Length: 113
Image (cartoon, rainbow, N blue to C red; front, side):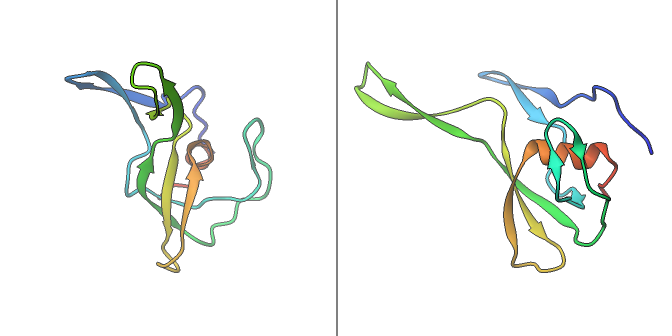
């Protein structure tokens, strides 16, 4: 098994508004997402390759804050903690939202195709 210690989690993309962080797991990647993933211990159950999932889109998380100038609430994007919309390749109608740290754990274990 190949293990990557401290892999790069994002790259910088130059935009006219400044540098943006872009994730390293690209849209279209096919993974075997596992149950029993812990954020501190990684995979805790035996690896099963039953159902492949494909990453369709990345959805950034948003938060609400009060803007004192306009005196209204505004939604702002927060850094990190993105959600990925994944679709089952076995049953095309099943769509789920999965946290990015679960997908990174699966990629670190070599469960991508």
